[in-house]
Image 1 (cartoon, rainbow, N blue to C red):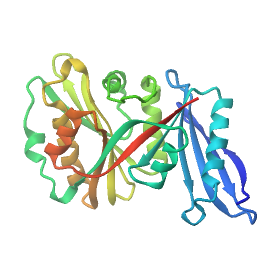
Image 2 (cartoon, rainbow, N blue to C red; image 1 turned 90 degrees about the horizontal axis):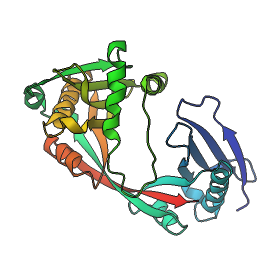
Image 3 (cartoon, rainbow, N blue to C red; image 1 turned 45 degrees about the vertical axis):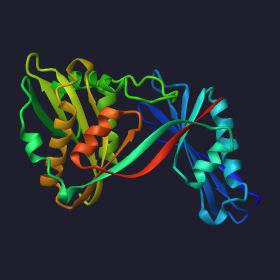
Image 4 (cartoon, one colour; image 1 turned 120 degrees about the vertical axis):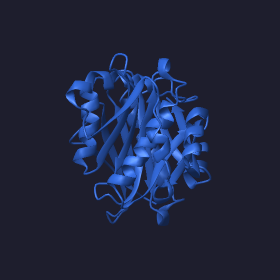
Length: 290
């Protein structure tokens, strides 16, 4: 099928990335597919492009996806990028498509859901952890906790990424606030729970939950991490249990909580299993080395 590919640039780049969309249209000007490239711009990830490619089901197997992929890879090369990563559900058309076009599978993910009305995390959330206390907030981090919270984000630095060329995410107070602002501007609510070390008042770990703006449907867990020197004290499960408890109380219209975890991340998989999250499907991260 003859297609025309039009590049559309992002008028509002974030502090850590910018986006480029390649829109494929047929001879009548109707959209038939798209490729969205997230070009990372922050230090530690300027080598990376994250790709999201879709073709309308009625227009598949006509070469449109191949054309879009070729155009996306070319743009990545022009941007002097080293790696392109893209995710596909296990057994999906995208899974087979990427495998046949030079991408290699670098990470396996388990997606899971907790039915919120049936969850029972109150007892665990209310069980004290000697030497620690829980704090929480909505939206952006309070000023007095900003530096400690930004520092605690390094708890994710050793998160299992297997063969993914993901680079290093460098967090500071500006990036923390920018990430919260993006969520706020799209109309969603960011809820954060942290464990505080009572000996010095610093944040030992955190977990984040993004709730739809209308308070209905499913909420999505973002990052959960505990700094290495504080691990082994049950803080990850404690914080996540408190996040569940708060979601139940503050958002009775929510149906469930969603999470995704690398299959090599055994500690987090154990936490999810203990809290009642049930696997829903698997996905794979694919990578093309340029």
